Length: 305
Length: 214
Ligand SMILES: NC(=O)c1ccc[n+]([C@@H]2O[C@H](COP(=O)([O-])OP(=O)(O)OC[C@H]3O[C@@H](n4cnc5c(N)ncnc54)[C@H](OP(=O)(O)O)[C@@H]3O)[C@@H](O)[C@H]2O)c1
Image (tube, rainbow over all chains, first blue to last red; front, side):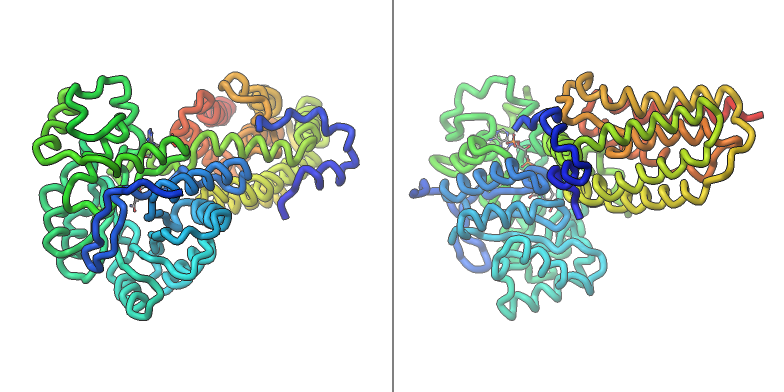
């Protein structure tokens, strides 16, 4: 039982003290650049939405509504992929709250993870996640951070075969265990790989992105802003005079356009708590994308800052 | 082949400062005025230590504080946004149990340095802690008080058991000390200006134990 304000005051018979308590500071989407998921051809807008930290708001009604507003703006702007994990605290129920409020937008592409070392408990965990989201099935189920992947993957392929999920993937972040990721990509029929890629963390350009292209594996990019550190690092610096050739209007878009212009990338999933930011991020998937020459200029420019 | 060394402290932080302090504000709001009742109980324990008598009745008051904090804050609220805290909730309940089994009829008083140092720690936990919020640039609605929030509960208890026990209370020190370390690191990752306070409690406790060794 959680003790509520009402229960406390009534239990103590102290209604008169209540006022002494300090009060609580209390359409039609634009055409987004989309890429086909290599294993199916299904089109995916190149900017999605992450939920690590940003959607972990517990049962705070104000913050839950703020997250629901972010989701609403995301779908209104044409977004599809929403990524979460059982590791992210209360993010899953927050997504479920927002989706219920929005009556489950049709364009939702649900990307979840299984994250449990005991492989016999994978199915139960996926079922718990499904109940939190309130969806009938997940579109994509990924093995989070390669945890017990040898055991989880066969189970996920079976779920895919029986129509309980549509795609299977694996994830890592910040450059961890890339050799192992490559082995999985080379030997398992996965649909997606999720890795970290941004203008300063480009190691995946060498082997993982080319391998994904070769094997027909979709690429989801996490930590596009290094969890906001890139924005903080650059926000006081001037944007380049040749910004036009990138198609970006802000630093956030500059950083996102760099990622999504890589031809192997299917979708980048920046997380945010703010409606204006989610709109700005999805706007990065409109207009022009930098070409190879501009991409090199972008790297040179930020490295010289 | 461990990639643990590639993680930084902030990588373990799974919620934002805003979410955490709003959680504390809402909790304070829900349980008001228990803050006053718990602090009054804590001051009663302090008085028993000063008067050096009837120390046995101080222990149930401390046990209730640990159990309440474990149940209402750690388990029902904080663990919702920070799942590793469910283990801390179990540790807090264990500490409540350890306090109960440690109840002894009054024996010889502790050495003076431990008595007065312990009383100082209790004053930090009972009086200074609730006032820290405004100094850390937060609203008083997110004030942390003994019995409700883990940090002042741990600090007050460290002070109380040092001031009340004739011998160093070895059994009752590990859980509060460990909590202070976890909390200090969490606050540090949250870039909270009050992050040094739990570390100060650890240093003070260890110093008092060492200084009072005869
Ligand atoms: N191993 C894994 O599977 C793994 C690991 C890491 C991440 N991920 C996934 O990838 C997602 C993204 O990574 P991340 O959340 O770590 O970091 P991120 O997306 O690089 O950064 C998120 C931060 O960027 C800020 N931001 C977003 N849009 C902005 C804008 N337009 N202007 C200014 N600031 C902006 C947000 O702050 P505001 O709230 O102020 O906008 C937020 O604090 C995660 O949420 C998660 O879903 C998966």
